[in-house]
Length: 260
Ligand code: COA
Image 1 (cartoon, protein in one colour):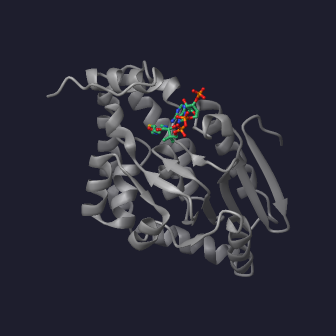
Image 2 (tube, helix red, strand yellow):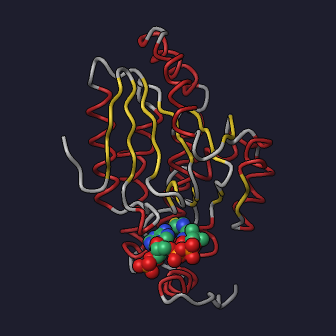
């Protein structure tokens, strides 16, 4: 299968999906989300593939978020639909795959980019990587699982701070927080992930699939959290802050929020 926005390579039991929109810092537009779904689904159904590595092409970004230019003018209903469809097509889909997925975070992982890395089964970052959920600076909230998965991974207080400040953390801080499992040089990132993938591929795929299912089951009581997130994400699209935040980004100026 060939894709417009992705490059999929295979080496024995290991497949690598690289998002290939480096000029847009691999931002997730509608087409990329659909193609990622299709690629993950095809690899899950491929008997020989035991591990999938997800990364971004170019030296700068893993994924700099959802494509702001696509949703800047959405209504509340469209915003809610965007989040719900994203959860189903990609973020929950990846988390629930029985083929392990490693995120090789090679640069900026922001907004939907960090959310996708968090939906992967675990993460390895390069030294230059920067991670954050800057949505509130755009007048919206994380809408692809970030309000649920970030506290699961780093704890509620740290997640609150990272989301409220819209800040970015370095890979060293991400390692200290447990957001990523390892930090390596950018040059060594893919080979490091391949070595881990190779170790995993020696083990029972059925058992690994069941282990993923069981580990995930412990977090399913957060289903209401996800529903709350979708509703709140949709509501963001009806606010003046959202119009101002996204317009300012697209016009390359600082946002001036009207206040409460
Ligand atoms: N959606 C759409 N386009 C994006 C994007 C996004 N999330 N992130 C980056 N881009 C585009 C830029 O608009 C720019 O396009 P252009 O060359 O056609 O103008 C291109 O990618 C390069 O980005 P640029 O901002 O010029 O790079 P930079 O090095 O100055 O800054 C970032 C890098 C990551 C700090 C900055 O791009 C950024 O803040 N991106 C948005 C992050 C974000 O808020 N994500 C959450 C979305 S919900």
